[in-house]
Image 1 (tube, rainbow, N blue to C red):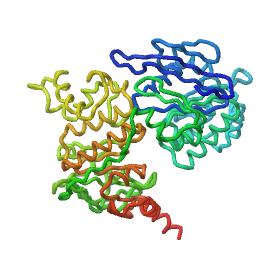
Image 2: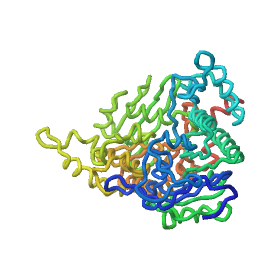
Image 3: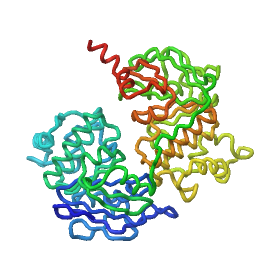
Length: 505
């Protein structure tokens, strides 16, 4: 491994972990040094999350060496990990929303004053000092409820500093952040590095990895591959190490025969959310729905499917009206919806792969009202095979699977309904480059078989690479309908800011 300038804070050597028949980590190794930011990359299923959970005390390793500083450790709880100076900043932090920012930082260890009463003044002063040190402005007296994801992460970092954490692990921290929020988070990360702390940064975004990190450790199939200095390698080399092959075509768009309209949306409006939205999606067509965060893309999709209601307008599928706010009718008529948040809205994480895939069609399974596990397995097996879901058994729980495989399970669940229209929101968010190519190839094949697809994505290259047409929303209004051959980053971004430009003009 390339040597850094600071002392070794964390070292894992050939660590393994299995969950029943599922081997999550075969041979995980990483070294983090003081005053350095170390990237951990790999495809979903490579073992990154399991390795982090071992360091965080969520799981105990089966074998291998685990050292913090020079001392062998074996955490049996997250409390032990925190007490040893380890802090993990997750993509979506879990806070107490009804407590203030300060109370969240000092939960369980509030300073006491006279009469052993909580010294709130001292807490607020310390919280203000922490935020000043981090170079951010957050009111320590405000409730945590309503904080942006970015501010929640900063709050978690402040908590870690107050505990004098010497190792901070940032697990996909930028997935839900805007560009400005990412810049602020990176400034904080660099300041922590300069203080001499060790940081591990996990991300699928290579521009962030190369812009922030000093070294990169690559994992593949649960095993350590290599560690390289960032300034001695490039994206292509890292990708090849991650997937064991070159990913020659990330957007394998297959030409398809585009047929008649399948989905027709006319004058759809929801007060304060979106206004007078009209468009069509035809059989064999992939329509990309683009726009800035908050433009109303997901809200339009949820209204079409019936999860959310709307004030006026109509939704028609294959010439049949879809009543508003009735997702059960939408499913019966042939709409499938893969939501943005697969873990909370798309999966039952404690249920098996078979039960998840067969979840929507379960009512048609079984005999004389009796449903057996074998019926679920029989229904799920062909879809799991078709989507190449990497799991040793259909009875493995979804919670033990990688993000990429979880996404495949959610897609399989909806394809099992034999839909006419697939609405897929952020199809590749949080999954690795190899699995992205697999998902893109699947979408292209489905369109080639005549399925109508409405794809929502915040990744402009994905929209431009996969869509036959690009619809652009800005502040809840449809500002452009752009054919594939005319869709460029400049054209899409101009439409995405059109209403803003008109307002400021």
